[in-house]
Length: 477
Image (tube, rainbow, N blue to C red):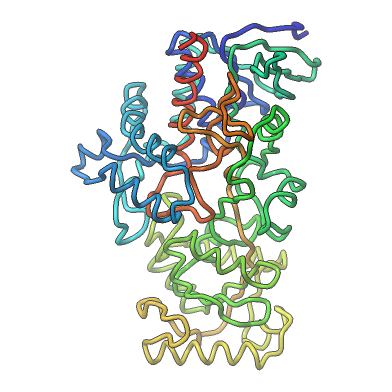
């Protein structure tokens, strides 16, 4: 049975990348820490992540990579048209190298800092040797060694305050009932609300139910608690899209759906973008979202399929399917999804058109026009890179019905560069901090692939920063 009350100095809500980093950093600053995790195991989306952004890190220096903090700061702000809080971005970028060193000192191994896509301007993506699970395992062990008390399957319900609005703890709930945790400060790191359709519909203008979540279905507990406690919001309604795909399909089809030499058409059978923008992945999804009902069809022929099997995929999916990986199981994957009704394999474009629900002449005109562009080596419509202009003339033909895929929401709780939660007058709520994707002001509506690893890195860095400032607050500094 849970006790009626637990006492601590700093309570951290959520044991993903931000929460684990916060808990460890708080304990390193001589604080007594309780870490609450709603699920049965820690890690969250961090366990699936691949690498962190950093500027002027020890790893970059070892590889002789030029990644100046000023340059990265300017890229981030220019990409967002200065819609971000520059002090948050600057603090994050400036701390990023130290965070890489902090993790290396704990035993985290960064194997390399590759280009996320060809001709990337600057290399920021610090890949973990075993992926995000390595970072999770090491921080969990580090927290245990430092005396962090992790309460699993424990849900934070609401923040506690005194009569002056100071945070004094959090009410928590388990299967055994509610109990109180008293604390001098609370750090919210609950991972957004990607699994809460009610909040998605309420806050996200782009969202519709054709879209599907590829990350964990977090429900927005931290956001709701913060708003109830008087927090202002910033960036509320942003979704971190990660391309389009057949929902529930194997990763081979995730790769093919975004492939550069395929053709994308909307429900009217019309091309609507330069498909090669998918090299930047996050820009390409904006074109899909604009289409009727926010979905599209990826089209290709047998020749392209065989090239993918025999020579390899052009772009791939991060480190899961690196470029030029031969997808030897693609044929079987297509057949399985065809049996489910998500893919159509046909001997003619007329059959594909009927499956889409359009007149065959419409799709024929689209394909004929595209094939003519390929023959000419010039896409007169969208100026697609001629390297990826492959005519579709070899049956059978393939069509994948694809929907926008997103990893998480970003934004909601307004913070400053100390990760203090702000009220509607831009004043800090005493004792309340937030980190990770629960917060706004550090990323805009389109993920900046130029600075690969931003989200994962912001979670870890903001967790550390929040903990350090929460410890100072606790000590009256």
